[in-house]
Length: 242
Image (cartoon, rainbow, N blue to C red; front, top):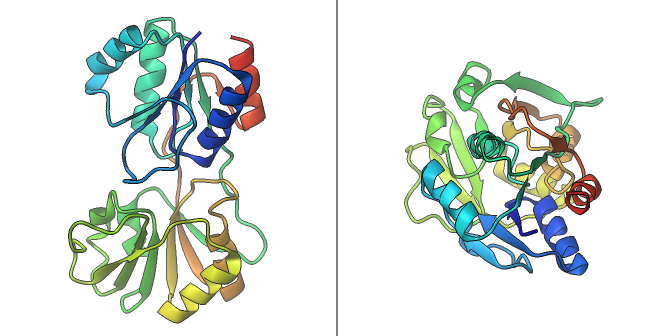
């Protein structure tokens, strides 16, 4: 068996280390959203497949016999396409999807379905921290009259696309204390977050709770109707039982 690990999350990193430890033939694939990704410990390809035909061709050429999808919860188009094509070709597929965050005591969340909806809840004059990444930042174009700060991992190659925004470069993880200090220094009034789930990036939500900041939480998109697990341990059990 040669496994294709669709990566891009902390869980994928953990799976990769366990695959190496097991001595299982596997190839990791990264979309290329980050310029200097952490080493996976596996042979790694970077970039898209060139559409559906390109993906199917790669499965054949690389001798892929199973696919474990550990991409970001918001990479829904990739997951839907992969699950569908694997089902069509009878290639075993499983999605590793970590549980989403849920609000707790002290949280001030407003659930929204898309970036464009944030403007209906965030008042003019607010300083807004976009913890949503560089891709799709133009979907906040209707947040005029607000100051926007978008945190990115890599230094931007172009200016912020709107005159009322700036990029802030920072590579996670960030502690709760670091996030509290950052939000205080920047004078943040609102936080916008995608419901990615996971402990690694939850510190910003704990900081917002501590500072009594409102959060516009973007709900996850629909996921493929396919086999799914929620933990690295369950993903490895699936791999070992293929």
